[in-house]
Image 1 (cartoon, rainbow, N blue to C red):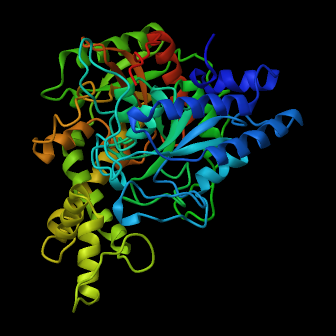
Image 2: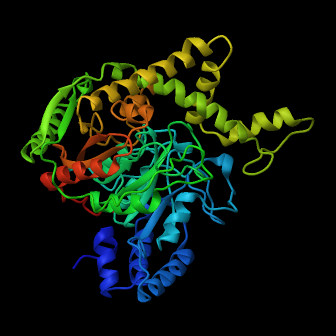
Image 3: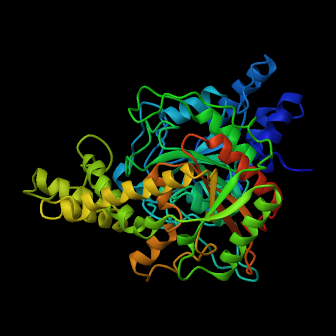
Length: 510
């Protein structure tokens, strides 16, 4: 029999409604798994008292017949989401001791739907990274290992803790954030994706991660990295779970000026499994130098699966893709340098100990030097440079123009009748922790090559596990959808998931 913590959201929902188990039983199973999973370093702040209180309330709602789909479902919450009275540090020393007096809109909506918070999840500091190796809490560890090898692997980033927790069955799902290069691979977490931060970790861990259209999910109460790129989304074990959880997270929020005032469809009802007559685009520019042969083979296999399901697969061109990475790594640091200027040690968080004669300037300098890690410092400096008087037009304005061209590429493809676009999620399977430590930063940034375009254009993207590498590690494919048509995108992903039949799980070593 499946342990409750190993269930999907859909299966747990049905079991709770039938009375086969209680929300307290489910929460206890996840809390036990969470404590046993300390070796993954996925959870960095545990909240068992909150979880059990929310689970008891969920049981009461279910008994009363008031049971939304997420009622009683145990989640992990990425440390980027502000949670009232619970440490919310964005994995940075500079926010040590910060306990918000308010709740993010995403977590508020999940709790209103009856979800249960097990704790806060590890991540790259301020979501800046693709491997969860920049966290002040130490590295998160991928539950998967290479065949015949015990080396610790990255779960991806920035939502690496979310991905590891979902893949390791420490929770049923998680929140993540996606900015363009850090969220592509968890199993059932909320995360943020700034440049792939949901989609990439999901791919590395054999889970499902979706970045919705920019504006579909409120950013209020999410610690900002790059405000025009950040988007919160769910990380789950299946596409159906992603649809259920996204429905609870999405919707207009007056507190977020970038939030779209649009009705939220029934994403789960959209999973018909019928994509006959749909046109799937294969962008030729995504066939990049250095991509492994097994990633190429996986991509071809995914296209064949969609063709067999009745879709028409066509080659398309997204000519400005080659400029996406440089544009992203100008725009994102520029916005970061502005957003992170608020952390000064004056009002909250870490404050450096001052020496005799030190004034406010020394306090700022020492606090930021101690509080921000090397990658965050690097991106702040890059951002400050590209926004400086002599370089604003040469770098930042040019990057904005490139961004507009990338967005236009997608608009032209969709105008030609393309319903969804199929691409790889990552250029390789998960790599070992520390293996990229001596690499040029640009080499690390190349992990985001397939994901950043989606953030620059504000489009929805989802990663689905499709197969295993020769070393026994999960490999995922990404699907990109039309703006605001997450329902259609989820259905395409559902078809791909069903055709692939991916059911592999990591061997438990932790």
